[in-house]
Image 1 (tube, rainbow, N blue to C red):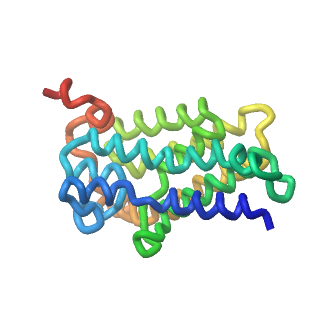
Image 2: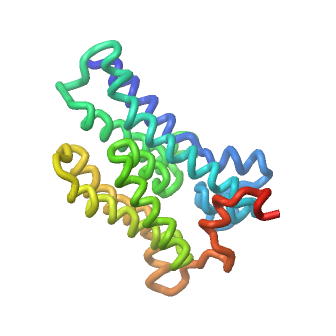
Length: 222
């Protein structure tokens, strides 16, 4: 039994499970689980709090929940012993990153409920391929502006990840497998959004330009 790896798995899950939007919402006096879309994520918090900067903060922390295990997990494990099963750095990063995503979606702190995993998946993507992960974020941001529907932009950005990483030479098989599984998983977490889209009931982002305001400082808005 590889004890360091088991500990890394547990810590990755607990880190991913940390309900950032719920914690920040409580500080602001807003319960994201019972208002708005009831999704404990950055977008719902931004809408309910009326402060896009808080949404950006939650998005950043949720992305870090995926980035940290995927990027540093292998390095920390091999400080005290070999990686399990002779796995490479890429395989360990994919596994720990995937566990963090599962923790975000099935949070132990929220009775196995949670967010949709988009921001945490972005963090894992940035750890595995920074440039492609950044490109996917740009795709998400542009589509959020154009469609004013976060669900659409998230699903297309998720689909862009395997499409782009397949063009990169020498990609590790574990990274490639993760890239192709991720969009299918995001479809699962967005199944209710897809039903609303088909019915024409998916709410649009308000008229203000969400992404621009999300990352615009309070001083600039004033």
